[in-house]
Image (tube, rainbow, N blue to C red):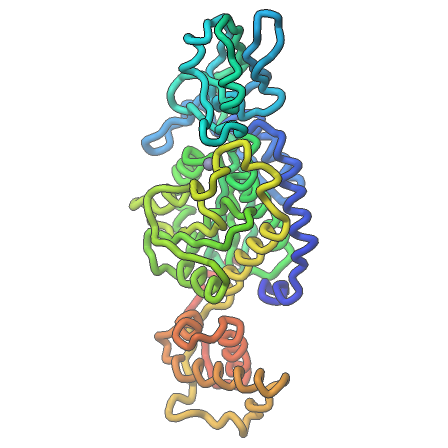
Length: 443
Ligand code: ZN
């Protein structure tokens, strides 16, 4: 079965529930850019798809960066002298600044205060903070908790370790009938945060599950990486392999109720950019923005030394919803229906890329006589027949070896499915010949 055929009877309800359950299962884990939480997350994903887990040693040079020490944490708290915990890592892993160095000391409130982070405007939310590349420690707490702290002595403990170890990332490759590849990348380094992080992990996992059972012209390379250092590490280890990537998408923030949003690749008009725009055509509330060198891991894939055709398909983009990077980005913010709708959008883009091709009209001098070939009596109602006829006329007219089916769909305003179906029936009648060539067959 091809991807477009799968979409005809798309089981949105079932897949949405499964994706939500994946996020729910991963939610309690304290992840970071290295360490056991990330490993456990990848092992969980690896129980659903064929994932290779790579371990890259601390100190490895990856372009201008160095793989950092591995961070692990067991417990952390701020306690009163009587032993009661006023801030407790066990109730939320966001309470500790991610990558905090180990600490155990007694401090006055004024000494402790510079290490505490809250959001005054959102007094019930815990912020998410990190300190990956500066050795530091701190706690994040609700503003109400912060204001309730009285003068006095506090015991602080962060039972963490920052030692030589590994950076871990996961890679799943589903080969296609050609050597061309589609990259789908998500960051998997945030602790208990749902839309920014777990929604992407769950979506890419489900993409792997679904695509593993479907016909593929492209190979699909799915990456689960810690943000920034992850794609840098992958690119440093796969400089040659990266040249096979024809199209790519960075997945994040795909579970909230907002409409779909696409951020173009640095190239701006790559096939992926045009396929994504075509997929979004007519989708209510959807929006498209140009590339900028800020955001998620498209920053690395689109750096000038690679300039890969990688965009980012999300719902509400990072930083544009109030719950972003706070404890309110939780399981209540993401919805099974949104996850399923995002999955459908990704598969629709892939279905366009899989079928896009360029043809030559074998009968270019005036229109071929379609009636004589029975091409007017397409099945379906009168309206379908009319639409199919329009699609055939467009495909015949623009198939001059210069226009792809994507070009034809853009220019005609017709859906890609209609254009592709017309090309199929015209090819079967010998009126079209494919002229573009896939890269070398993989077999
Ligand atoms: Zn984030």
